[in-house]
Length: 347
Length: 268
Image 1: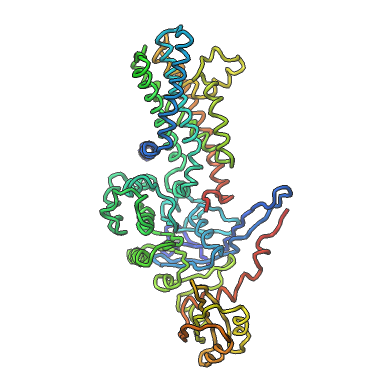
Image 2: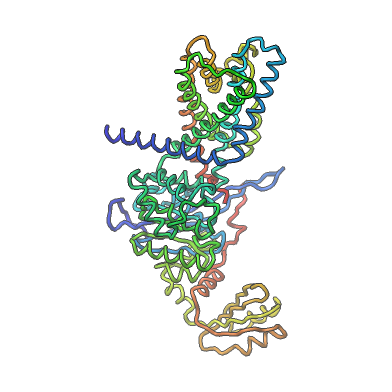
């Protein structure tokens, strides 16, 4: 998958990971302490081309953040290799750090009691921005992330969206060619998330390579050139959003809104010979059942019968989305070996 | 040659900018203002009253001796809790990964931070001296006024680098806070901040000599009320600062490697 390349070679992939493995050792018990080894990443390989927006999708604990932290030199891989712009993330940390920016989701990582401008000035120094270039660079970034006019306010008064945009400006201070975004829209309201997506899209248009993780399928569908789905520390599928959707292209999704559906009723749905998969999502007061069946099979009436006395709201049949493909991939690949096997007792 | 000069200038610039930035952060921290200003003033008041009750045998210079000592107690407390806890604080704030992962060397950033902490600690000294002058009529005179800035600078360097050494060491221990509390009072005594070193048991001598605050107190007192210029104390401050820095850098390399191996840079 990975070809030999030099840092200066024009065809060098922006990001390369080859058989990356990362295990954590932790301890259990107080009196009889046992050492446990947890495999967070189990042999991940992929390449991201220069100028590409690559998405990593996966459930919590799938290994996305661990993978990113190895690529940005904050974690050492247990085995395998990774390069950014041709530089090894273990041996050439300084060269890698000069070429990357990274943004983690959430509110931490800023100095709250000083202004956004002071935060950026401080990090500009640490990111090696030449003194004469700092002010124009910061002004340009404030403009890019839409914080012009608010930069002299204390960060503690910023909304979550403003903090996240300040993080992005911070990550871009030294104009890195490669940007890592770990769940950048985490906790943002819909308007904030939309503005953020617009910013990310403009970065890619400007030639940046972006690797991002997200839980939001429509975000990945709208932004990413290619996507890899991680589950249980392994990549279970990779390709364009259309490639991933094609996995379930021959299916129809019936979406049923229910109130107080019982596990027995869900089991009856699963037992239907024409039903391929059933996923239930809890809403505030209702449950949304997503039922996959072969395209062209009319089973809606039967599904209603299986639900028995369950109160039913809206029913709709639709084409599969990326989210359906994702749910299918996660459910079908599962964590084949199970969490228990990933956490092997070694002592 | 030109490249290495430019590199040194860039390194110094990072240390200086982080130094100033850290002072700014401390200036708006209620907790550290309380530690650096209010606490030493209380200690100074106790010391002044004790000396008065004791008959103030050595006269006005004894008041200055006490004021400088109690001022340094505040400097030490700030260094211990602010400098010593620097890495742990950054981890809590979520900034540690950003600072470690920056292209600039992290040891320079940490040095700037602990120097900033130590400099801010000298607010204690200013507060204590002002308190002594205003309330106890303490005369503010120095026997070697031109050496006083040098002595202060040497003491800041020494304490700043000691803060860096403490930060790199403390981060290895989960209960470093308890260790900080344990170290506060013994250093006050062992470095002659409260009572002159000559009054302490002889076996404490070698311990005092390797503790840089001893020479910081000695340099500042020497410039203010000493019989001779405090060149030796200033020199010892600088030598120990260098030794501490070399040690701190070595430990930091180990600590950062361990953190990348054990995934302990963040709390998330």
